[in-house]
Image (tube, rainbow, N blue to C red; front, top):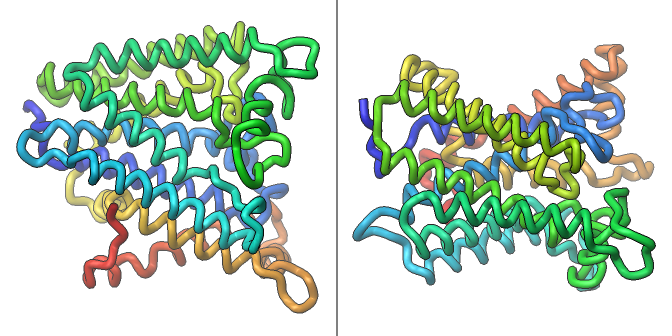
Amino acid sequence: MAQNIYKRDGSLDLFRGLDVLLMMLVNLQGSDAAAFPLLKHAEWNGLTLADLVFPIFSLIVGLSAPLALDQEGSQPNWRQILRRVFILFMIGVVLGWLIKPSLHISDVRWTGVLQRIALVYLACAVVARARQGFWFAVVLASMLLFAHSLALLLITAPGETGPSLLPGAGVSPWLDQMLLPGRLHRVTWDPEGILSTVPSIATGLIGVAATRWIRQRSRTVDYTNTMICLWGTGLLVTGFTLTLILPLNKALGTASFSCVTAGTGFVVYAILRQFYSDSEGSRALVWLMGLGRAALTVYVIHMLLIVILVRKLSNGERLWAMLYRHLEYIIASPPLASIVFAIVATMASTLALPWLRRHGWLLKV
């Protein structure tokens, strides 16, 4: 059965909801040191389940963009697009400030997850408005990844003896130090920095191209899902081949990392599309779709919970550490206690959603 691209894509809501759920389980671990390895970010080179969260968000931003931007007669205008970008960006800045409040402007962190999502969405909107079809987005994404790779491999930062892919060295952290105002998350560089945003934009554009292809080459669901899975497989092969030149590295956003994560995202998306068409109406599916449709609200709630958990008690201990310590005493297995803590905190972050939905108070931009 052919898919109408202008209708809301329930499988995409399901995909987003699954990513939101994984995000909370990663961010709300009781102890990062004790967490299961797959739920911790790689220290530098490497790839874990946790490292998939944000790249898949970027892919979903791209997949979603044409659903609104390609609709004749009801397209958002540039004022609406820029308003959305600004609000997303500033929500991210405010949430970051709440975690580490300061009255000094130099202590504000201007980068972050929502800020990067805002920039990815802006780039996707510009490209989607500039050209119809999917090839332009594909070519531009490839050019961005190629240029980014050349920058990492060929440019020597001032004061260094050659190009470097080591933590805190090379052109990427140098650009962060030179151009980013305020506080850098890692002191000398930022994981959501300037150069590493380029491959995130490329991932978003790959998503734009995929949705455009689905619209222009409308076929049966099974055929479309097979093609999406093949794209994912191709990107995985490309990404792992590129590891001969560039390591899988989330902080740098290497082309190998971008291809592998986008490829994984496409394979998962194809599976979820098939599952959605076969299992529509199940309670678990409806709950995950609800998370996907309220992704911004859930993100803000879980960040506000983090703001509370990182507060220090009168004895100087953080509330987070105190609660985990008691849980670990009961469970007696640090990794298990850490994941139980994350599950409880994740459920707490979603409890208010039905009430907020009934009152029409879900955040929308």
